[in-house]
Length: 309
Image 1 (cartoon, rainbow, N blue to C red):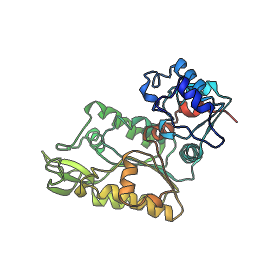
Image 2: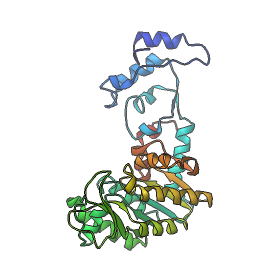
Image 3: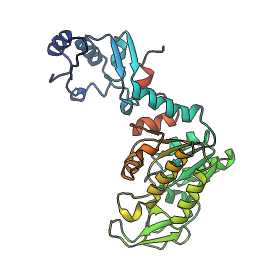
């Protein structure tokens, strides 16, 4: 049906046979969807002729939208699907009742996108491993020269504060001891493996180094639960993919040894699949933003709207 509300939809859903399926148009064509417009939610509910609602879209559960939250007010019963249930079991389990030791591997380009989840995990983890472009903001906080590497200058104090918090809480906070540097941001760049204390001017770090990868791998083998969100480097370029794929290998080995390994959405999922190690992980989340917010301890609107059975 080329709409998701109105008389045409109401007639089609009223005429459905038992076990039938009616596919409706994308709800995003209505501006009120992302605003959780109560009138739009009511109209969608009425057009559906439904009394029961099932949300299996974990990747949208962190959004309070008309189709994920508002519509639930007009249903007799709202439930999560099997995927939603699995996501909550793994991700909430990692936050609320993990098998210890618990480790978090956090990567990606920017500290700014990961500060809340790092802060939250410092209260729960035994160890935290940091990789990706964000490491250079931490190095600047430690007074190191980082060449032309990306740094979020305004977050240098926050990086220093996170390291202090980890120390105060007794959480092992692992930063790479060496990095793969490049003379330019390109696949054909010249690459070198150097200590983090020897990054020359004009060069930028694009991956964690071999020594760091060996340390990360050794330490991760000691953990019973590992949550990974964010790549260790620019894995889209082959020269700078070893760190990310190395973490994937380490987690696959940890899974084989009985650990619970959770891939928290986004680029980490793409990296694991590219490495061909998806089946080796305990759980691969389908939600990037949703998994991050759940790991931060936030209540997801799409989950809160479900019936409390």
